[in-house]
Length: 271
Image (cartoon, rainbow, N blue to C red; front, side):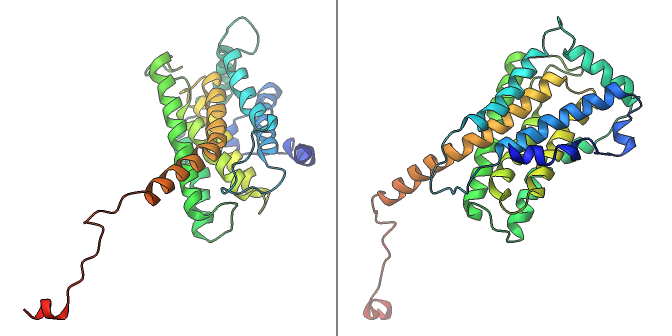
C-alpha cells in the first residue's frame, strides 16, 4: 500500500479533458476523484510484493481479495435507495453535470488493458509468465469474467437506467476491462508502475463513461469491477491446474497405430 501514498498527491491534480468530465461544481469533482481513488487503491493492493511465476501458483492474500470485495460490497450497498449514496442519486448527479454528453469511447477503452497486454507481449517485453502462459491466463480470466457477468445479467434481469433492456447488472464493459487490467498488473507491474496505472486508468474511465452514457448504474460498474479483478486473481489458480491436467493427460495418452510413423524399406518403394 506504500505505492498508493506515493501517488496520493497526483490524484488531486488529475486534469482529464473537459469534454469528457464536464465538471462545473465541486460535488461532481469529488465524486470523480473518489472513483479514481478506488481505482488507484485497487492498483496498489493488486501489485504483488515479490515476483511470482506461473510455475508456482501464488497464494491468496487478504489484500488481493479485499479490494475486489470492497468493490462488490459497495456496489451492492448502492442498490438500496434508503441512504445518500444510492444508485439513483449518483446517476442524477452524473447526468446533471455531464450535460447530455454521449460517447462511444467506452467501447474501445474496455479492451484497452487487454490490447496493452497483447502489445507489450508482441514487443517482447518480459513479464512474469511466458507469452504462451500469459495468453492462457488472459483467456482464463476472460472466460471466468464472461461466465459470471452474463450469468448474473440473465439471472437478475435489472433494467438499465435508459430502459433499453434488462441486462444492466453487472457491467460487462467494466468487468472485462478490470480483468484485463488485473492480468496486466500481475504481469508487468515489476517493469514499470506506469503500466498498471494505465490499465486501471482505462478500466476506471470505462466504468465512468458507462454511467455518463446512462447505460449502467454505479452498482453495475462497481460489482463488474470486482468480478473482473477476482477473475484475474482466480486465473492464476485455475489456469495452472488446467495446464497440469492437460499436460499429464497428453503424456499418458496411449499410442495408437495412427500415432506410429510408418517406414517403408527401399525394396517396398521399388516394388
